[in-house]
Image (cartoon, rainbow, N blue to C red; front, top):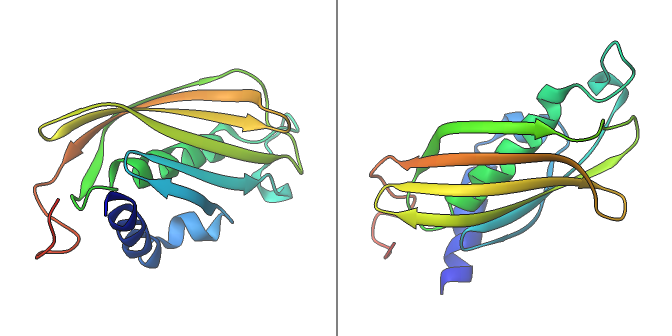
Length: 143
């Protein structure tokens, strides 16, 4: 049941998320408190240094964070996020953001997202703090 709820919440979010879709970000996997999302660095994502603009890497990580923390039939938003860029993303690279729940209590949660390329080369580390809105995706379903 928790896996099915996570998928249903992801489908509901995906249906109303043109920002994520417009960047070519794909949802690879979702489950309770976790998600994986993929994005290929396109020419329009490269900055004046010839590398992927950090804002696009942040957006990929933020989207993975969002799908992970919205997997319990509770609508949740970011309260605080921070990212550390470890290596540059390069044109044509396929980036994978893996989000993992670290803690969740009441309306608050902490999630870590690692963005990798290739054979697990770390590009960035992101930490997000979430805050529940007190509303559900599916009114009559259990949390």
